[in-house]
Image (cartoon, rainbow, N blue to C red; front, side):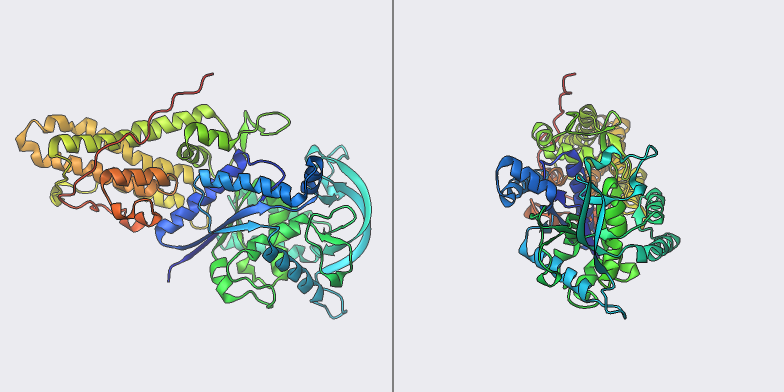
Length: 540
C-alpha cells in the first residue's frame, strides 16, 4: 500500500483580495504535494477560505451587500488565482459549507456533553466576564498582551472594553500536557514545529498561558458565523478561530465527530499530516488552541499534527501593508511574467521558515540565469546538436555513457533537501541542486566541444556519449523540477519526444524514472522550441 501524505494550508480570510503571502503559502504546499505524488504517495492537499467573522460582516455592511454575496466574490478571486498559478488541490474548504457547519455544531455538542464526575462539561463552561477586546483579532486580551509601556501594541488594532456572557473552552487545564508534548516530540526527533527554532517560541507562549479561550460571541453583535446548537440556549455564534480550525478535519476524507476516537479510515491519512501556516498564526491558534481541541476530540498525542511554519515576504525588511501601499498582487505578477516564473521565484528565493525581501528584479534575474541561460540553453543545445550531428537520434553505448558524477551528486542532494524527514524541506536548495545538473551539462559541452568531435570520425562514440548525456540529463532535471515547474516539465518532455501518450497528465512524471538510462538507444528526439525566453528586466 502506498504511503500517505496529507498537507493543508491556512484557509484564507475572505476580507480582501489575495496577496503575495497567500500565493507563496499555496505554491509551497502545492510543490510539496506534487513531490509526494511524484514519489507515488497517496496525497490529499486541502486548502480553502475562512468566510465567517466580524470583519467580514463589517466589510459586507460597508459595501451594502449580504455577507454571503461578499465572501462569494472574494472567494472567486482566490479560486481564480490558484487556477492561474497551477495550484492543484484535492479538497476545498469553505466555512460556509453546510457540511462544515454541521461538523462544528456536532463538535460543540460533543464537548458540552462530555461530563466529568461533577456533572459539568470537561471542556466547556459559561461565564460572564469583562475585558479588553481586540476588534482586529476578534479575541479578548489579557495583561500578558500588553507591552512594556502597559499599552496593547499596534498588532491588536482597535482595542475596546467589553463585558458579556460567553462560552469558554478549557485551555489552562491542559497547559502542562501541551508542554510535555512539545518536549517529547523534540526529544524523539519529531518536533511539533518546523523549522525547529520555532519550537522555543511556541514553548514560551504556552508557558505564559494564563486563561481559557472564549469560543462564542453574542449574536447581538455578530450574526455572520455558525450558531451554537440550540441546547446551549439562544443567542450565541461560534468564535471564528474555533470555526476555522475545524476545517482541517471537517473537509478531510472519512472524518466523523461522533465516535470517541476518529475513524481509522480518516486516521490512515491524518497520521501523515503537515499543516503549512505563516509564522503570525502559529501562536496561539495553531500551536495552542488546535492541539488542545484535538486532544478533546480523542486524538492521541502522536496524532497531533506537525506545523511547517513559513516566514514572510517583506519589502526592504518591512512587512507588506495596505496602509503603506507596498502590497504585491500575485495576479498581476503572473500576468506579467507567467505563472511558472512566479512559482519558481516564490519557492526558489526564500529559505523555508525564514523571511525574505521581495524583489521583482530578483524574479527576473533568477528566471534568466537559472531557466533561460542554464536549463533552457541546455535543452536547445542538446536537441540542436543531436539534430545536426545525428539527425536527432540518440546512440547509447553503455560503456561510453555512464551517469556523470555531477548528475549523481545533484540528484542525491535534491532528494535529501526536498524530503528532509522530520526537518523542514529545503526547497530553495533542492531547486539549486537540480539546476546545477544543467550547469554541469553546459560546462561539459564547453569542455568536450561536440562541434570539434563531429569533425573527427574516430571520435564518433565519444560524440554519441556526449549527446546522450545531455538529453538524458535534461530528462532527469525535468522530473526533479516538475513539482515546481509542471508546465515547463511537460514542455521539456514534449521536446524530448518522451512519454507523449501522457502529455499534459501528472502521471507522466515519476521519481522512480529519474534513474540514468531512461532514454533508449535509437530514441528519436523532437524539435527545439524556446521554452524559457529571456525576460527583459523591469525599468527602474
